[in-house]
Length: 304
Image (tube, rainbow, N blue to C red):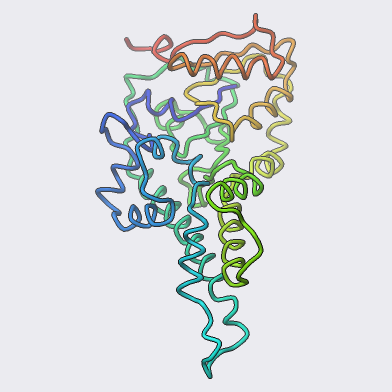
């Protein structure tokens, strides 16, 4: 079985990074050239974003400045109790406005991701690596069809775990629980019971951001029959995946579905940090170290 991450596309010269420190094509650059309004919305809700923020874009979708957003919407939509037009529903305008504002920016990001991905090139066929096509299964964390376009892998043997460009919404999001978001908010202000309108706006902001957590457990349940097919897998190749914390439950599930005493695992490592993450995953998953082999994608390249 092959597990494919974004580094696989990057190896094939597909500029699929969210951010490129060297100024190359990437999502951030594409937004700058094609959707400046969304960049302004991102800055308006997440604060002015640095290179470091964009470098961990998906993780940092949890970093909405919830307190500021809630305060702005509470100020803008505070009820005028002395007005003849005041109605009970006015108590909740700030709460609703906060939800609409934050859900709107997440929806706009998702739409922009789809528009960006669909215009990405199919990749450099001269960078193809050795893949055992016959009888192999594939899990792709990418939204692109690189496996099909460059390697002719039948789509029925590929599980696009986060969706792909087939008309359905792409799965993206952060990995932080509601309690973590609340703790992060409290670092900037001690959250206490106070003004009712402001408090409800704050609760709405937290709930909206929490709702855009990548629900890994739910995704695994939805594809449980696919994971059940892995019991006879003897070799797992993990190519181009950063092994970020939000995706680790997938790997634990995959290894738990195999015979850990027999399965052999090969992981492509881009640098020393990647090697440390890979070794940590192997140890945490109780895979014998003798069954683990770190490699580079370049070493597997067919045409050199």
